[in-house]
Length: 242
Image 1 (cartoon, rainbow, N blue to C red):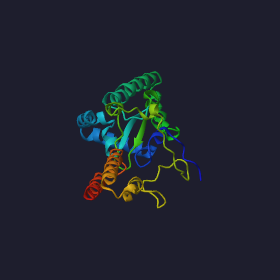
Image 2 (cartoon, helix red, strand yellow):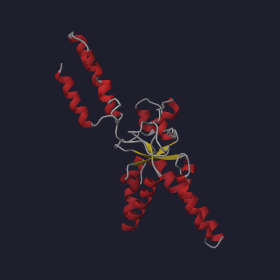
Image 3 (cartoon, rainbow, N blue to C red):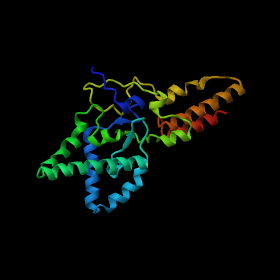
């Protein structure tokens, strides 16, 4: 089996949280953005974009579960999203427009390699991603990655600075998205991290174990490894044991 290329997104996040968006998904995002723009004469798209830009998304990216990511492994905030979508793309448009005017319209064909760059680029970046140092990630299970500001509030560093990495699984082609579903050989995080359940016979040790399990359960929820429903169900079960 071929080894999955270790792209930047996969180096920082497990596949159930984030994967590098495929060219097909990115194309779908472009099409949805164009459809929303056409259907609302641009006004609806602009309002929608201003709402979701702080999440590192455009309307099309939001509908397909994609996020604009920065080079340090954090999600782009509002200003960085505006930088990429307005300033960087605007400058590229001006350059291509000037070349197009000087070549009798032939320069407009430069939009094709600029947009299709992600189909052959190892990190699946388009030309504007290269210019803005951004990456597009897909969240298969609805996980929203943190921004740099989110991490600062928690006293943590961005993945690129903290040295946090995650191993990439194998893929037959080396280019496919990671599978969403867990295989039967994989250990469920609840079973793995809650396996200390059988500890302790004394009340004090039991209470200490319960507190530790509650903290671990909250960590799993915060990292998106379990759903809120699983969290509440498991939390109630732990409290019932006290």
